[in-house]
Length: 112
Image 1 (tube, rainbow, N blue to C red):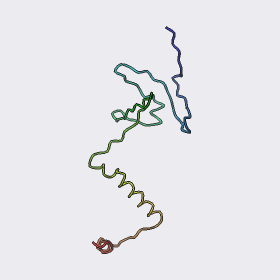
Image 2 (image 1 turned 120 degrees about the vertical axis):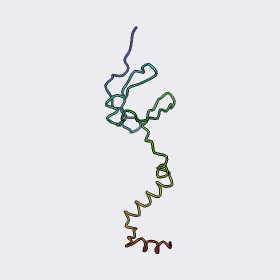
Image 3 (image 1 turned 60 degrees about the horizontal axis):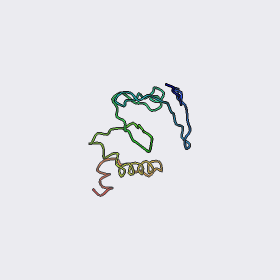
Image 4 (image 1 turned 120 degrees about the horizontal axis):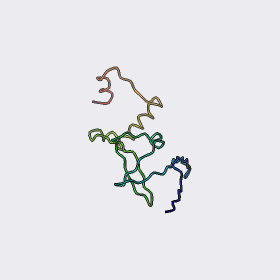
């Protein structure tokens, strides 16, 4: 059987639409398992047991690390909350802050 190797196993740096993309070929094993090569893992660190998202896009398979957030902390990562955090950071950078000497003083200021 004649086999043609299209890409060397060694990682190649490819530029696609202005992005530096690392590509390496791997073999699909039994049960459709693949090993993520060390050079790729070093670029996008993963630990054994962490979850990844697998997406089919056209004729591509995309594997992305997933950060799992405990349900009781999910509110912090909502778009609305993150917008408020971003606005607070901008206000801090501009010096738009008020320092209170006590909780009582803060409550008076906010009409509480």
